[in-house]
Structure formats: structure tokens, C-alpha cells
Amino acid sequence: GAVVSQHPSRVICKSGTSVKIECRSLDFQATTMFWYRQFPKQSLMLMATSNEGSKATYEQGVEKDKFLINHASLTLSTLTVTSAHPEDSSFYICSATNQGFEQFFGPGTRLTVL
Amino acid sequence: KQEVTQIPAALSVPEGENLVLNCSFTDSAIYNLQWFRQDPGKGLTSLLLIQSSQREQTSGRLNASLDKSSGRSTLYIAASQPGDSATYLCAVPGGGGATNKLIFGTGTLLAVQP
Image 1 (tube, one colour):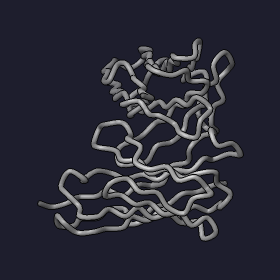
Image 2: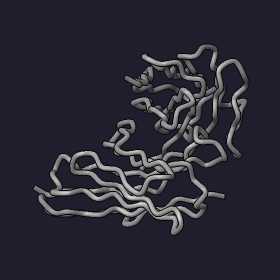
Image 3: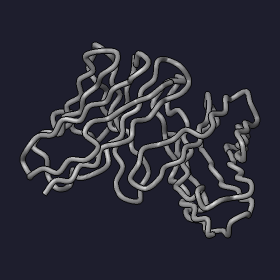
């Protein structure tokens, strides 16, 4: 149990385009989902916390207009990187929790912006 | 502000050795601490979660300890195998709630030589 999926696993796009990443909890209802970003050889940094049916809470320094987060249901959250630029290239990982003590992580999405 | 650090940053050992990874955190008021494994280009696999009331948790060849008062946790890996090669991350909740955002350590890159 407690499986979280992400789609796509890898995406390459041109600078200026928008990219949507999906995070799904497959076998449980996720009241809260988190979005992390990981640059090469660095640890995970939280970008935002997403609660179902409400606006996401962004960490300091994360542009909410650039990284749009939608958590419309208890099993799906989406992260849209708008007008992507090469510096947005990173590994994006989501996690989900159902108010328990553990967060369950997705397999990640590798974004490369040319 | 909670800060989590891990030492060493990298470790290389021959197969069969027992080893210890260290994690320290600045704010001892934590609800739990988790250890994760991350293979290159992949998401996170949860290894062990220790509640604040516990002193250690074991899973197979892995044993994690927690000393809240000193702000430290260790991950002990017995009889290491090449398949244990990965980056190991520890994480603690960053806020007042057990389901709050996770603050990750800097990670330890482990290489087990056959």
C-alpha cells in the first residue's frame, strides 16, 4: 500500500513553454501533498505544501505564479512550471500523506529545459 | 529554524563491513525522524521511521537510533552489500505538526565495493 505515482517521469521542453507534472496517490486519500525540488548532488528542498481544496502554501523564495499547484482531489495534485527556463531544470518529487506520520514519495520527474 | 546535517558526505567501504551514518538536527522538538534511501535519478524509499518516544528501530540489516536530547540519529548498516550503494537521507518534520513539511539532511553517498 501507500503508492504514489508521478507523470511524466521525464520531460524535455523548450524554454518558454509550460510543463505540467501530476502526482497521484494510488491506494489512499492524500489530504496533503508536498512538492520538492532537487538539484544535482543536493538534497531535497520543499517548494510548497498542497492541501486538498485549498490554495497551496509556498516556501520562501518560491514564485507561486511560476510554479502553479492544484490539488483538486484527494488523490491528485499537479505542479505546472510556467514559462520554463533552463534554470528550472531539476528533479521534482512529490509526496503525499493522509494525516499519518509518514510521507510517501513519488518516483520523481526529471525536467530538462533547453 | 530547523537544520539537518549528515556526516560523512560520502563513504566508500568494502563489501561485508558494518557502517554507521550520522544525522544531526538543531531543534530537538521533533515528532519523528525518517531515514530514506535514494538511488541515482530515482525517488525516495523510506527505510525507517522513529517516533520521538522511541530510541531505535530495526529492519533487517538496518538499525536506526534516535537521541532527541543531543539532536542526533544514526543509521547502522550491518554486513554491507554492493546493493546498499545509494544516497541515504534523514529527515525531520519542520513544523509543529507530525504531518508537516520535512526538512532533509544533506545526505550521505554510500558506495559499497564488491
